[in-house]
Each structure stands twice: as structure tokens, then as C-alpha cells.
Length: 468
Image (cartoon, rainbow, N blue to C red):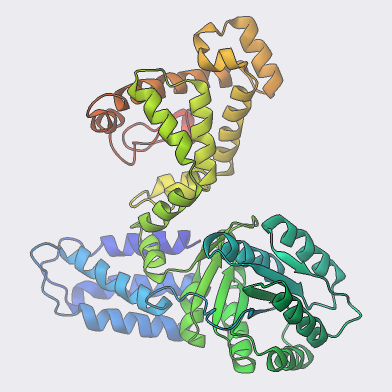
């Protein structure tokens, strides 16, 4: 998400470097490019106009401070305005009511309501420590009820059954009673969607809302429908007292205009964004962090939070102790590192949050990169424990057996072994006093400082990573 907009804005903002002062003349061309970039990203015209006017007003006549050059000063103004457009700060769910707190999920068919309901349940269970029940009031699609039941089991939420013969209000009232008896903290209600906004749909969801009086009414919107997303959000906002928005499928839209428009148009905060089909692919929406990512400044806070949550600390401590004792970094350790990286969303998920990654970020999005990691894991899995611990024993016949078992080629295995040898040397330095500094110098620092990336950040082997 935001790839295209990020590239355009970064290019536009470079033009203003080296000026002694920001003036109407020297920011005119840059502002024109910013305006075009926003419009091309599907940002609503009124939002673009307000944004550009605000940036211009704040930038004109601003003296360059001693610590910042004009480009940085202008970048800060753009960053602050992007953050303001998207809502300043994350707004969490309001669940401060006598349980169960009822949360109503609304939106068009295909926007991802059912999946988002399961994702939100997982988020509340794991990160908010809530007991969650889910129910489907979509009486038009039997498959939606079954889908929610399956997902509820996957995320460990309580599923309240419903059938297409029941009325939506009856279903939800029954679920509220069941949630009270089960001592559930939150009840998530998945509602019916339509292919387009119609009177019947709006009338039904209005009646349902009035009957159950939810504490939160979340509008689930597909980021990929661009400008139509804003119009749909506006229609729902006029029909229902929305409290927030969940923006879905953000991984499939490189433009990101919906995120920049929907808050301004509806006045309602984006509370979560979904990026991917997996049930864990839902994150709180932080406008300041998203603005930072759009401008190529990374999102280290989110990355740190994800690392705290998803990385296996015991494995990390075990590896640190092993290296400190002077033991070798073997292929089992390499496999663990690959799996840890996958837990953080793969190379693309990590690079996306690192500042100044530029073209490397685009290369990391290549599906071939994911295949290469899987190929490496498959090769290591095809080895015996003894071979993983001591790859020096790999002779010709062993190599043939390993590549046959993993469906790869001998050259793939040789590249993996070369890659492992390079990492072993780096890890040996980590185990010594001051080793981290030496390792970073040896790796050339970021962005070349990733395993398999030489200084300058170019991927070896004609764009592959790492070395494939």
C-alpha cells in the first residue's frame, strides 16, 4: 500500500533540497507534483485541495532552523499535514460498557466483513485479553455463517449459531443473551452486505442498529475500490451512527487514496487496517506511522511492537548464548532465522517499515523473494540433523539426495551453503565483545546490512535474495 504515492512524493520533495528559505516560487513546482501524486493515488479532490493549501500556508516564509535544511523542514510540514488528514492519532475501540460490548460490522458484500470480524476477534482475544463471541446476522448467505464458524474456531472465539430462517434482530438478541450467560466481554456481529447500496439494505441495518444499540459500529471498507470507497463510506455514515472504519485489502492497493480521504469525508476515524487474508493480519491504524511510511521514513515503532509480539524470545536467547560461547552458527540456526523473518511478514513486511529503503523495498515485494526463502527452508529440511550441524560433511552424493528431496538444483544448494558461510562469519563477530559494531561495519551498514545484501543494497544474483 502507498508504494506509488510514496515514490512520487519522495521524488517531488527531493527537488526542494538546498534552498536557503522556503518561498512561493521555490515550492510551487513541488506542490504541483504533490497535488498530482495525491490525485493519482485516488485521494478525493476536496481533500487534496485542503491538504495542498495547508502545506503551502505553513511552508511559506518559514526560516530554515539551524538543525534542518529546507527539504527537511518542508518534509516535516508535509508529514504533519498527512498525519492530520488521517486523524492525528490511533483511536481504539470503546468497550467501556457492561459486558457484552456489542460491536456491529457493516459494509458492502466483498469488503471483507466476515474475515475482519474474525481478525478483530483474534486481536481482542490475544492483545486485549477479552473473551469474545461472534455471530453472523447475514441471513442471505449461508456460506457466510459457515465461514464465520470456521474462522471462530481458528481464532478461539465463541461462535453463536444462526440460520437463514431467522430474522437478523432475533439472531442478535439471542446472541446477546448467550454472551451474557457465557460471560463474554465482547460480541462481534457480522451483518449482511449487498453488491451495492440499496434502500432495503440500509433499512434493515438501521433497524438492527436501533434494536441492539451497539457501543461500536464499524464500517468495513475495501481500500482497492479507490474513490468509490469514499462515496460508499459517506452513504453509510449518513444512514448509521458510525464510530469507526476498518480499511481492508490494503496489501492489494499501491495507491492508498482511500486511507487519506475517508477520515476527512466522514469525520470518522480509521481504527484498523487489514493487510492480507491471514487472521492475524489486522493492525491498529496509527496516522503518524502511516504518514512516516508514505514519506519513506519507515515505521520502526510498529516493527518493534511486532517483534515483541511475534518473535520467539527463547530461541533468540538460546542463539545469543550459543554464539557467546564461541559455538558455530549452523544451518538449523539459519532456518530459525528464516522462520522468524516470516513471522514478521517476510522480507517485504520488514523492509516496508525500515526508513530509506527505496528500491530495496520494491524488490522485496517480488513474489520470487518469498519462493527463494521457501527454497532455502526446503533444502535445510531435506538434510539430516548431523548435516545441518556440520554442513562441511556434504559431499556429492549427499548433495544429490538433498536436492532431490527438496525439488531443487545443486546450484541452489551451493548458493545456500555460500550464504550460510557468510552469515557464520558475521555471527562469529557478534559473539565477541563489540561484535555487533564489527558486524555492521562488515556488512556495510543499512541498507546493505541485511544478510545476503552487499553494501549499497543491491541484491546479488541479478535481483534475487539472498544470493538466489
